Length: 134
Image 1 (tube, rainbow, N blue to C red):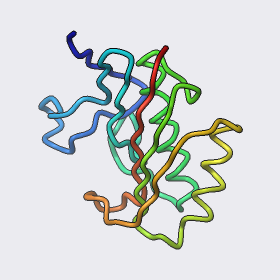
Image 2 (cartoon, one colour; image 1 turned 45 degrees about the vertical axis):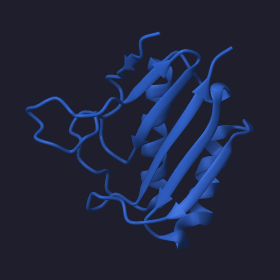
Image 3 (spheres, rainbow, N blue to C red; image 1 turned 90 degrees about the vertical axis):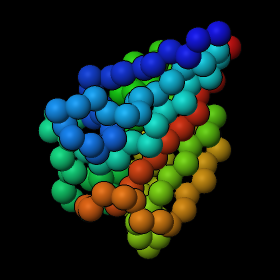
């Protein structure tokens, strides 16, 4: 069974390498009935620049990018079974969590949220996920 590379034009391509070269990672990979979405951050899809603003603004952009990749892979939040969240500042958790609940609209997932230092200056959040299909 081959893996299928999933790409959304409505989300930024990650990799943070020379923009004139293809990124070394996929936005998502579908393998069988599973979809693995790479970590998405608060990047503008057109420019790949970090969206400036507080954690709410960055969380909304990050989740919008994640939803765009899910859609390109034929999934919605209803298919997501697990999410991993990295926050640069753990004190941002309550405000992030409010945005998270807003986006999930009552959908349930498992989630791990940790404090760490994302690798790109200005990025205060990164989220990846795994989605399943019947």
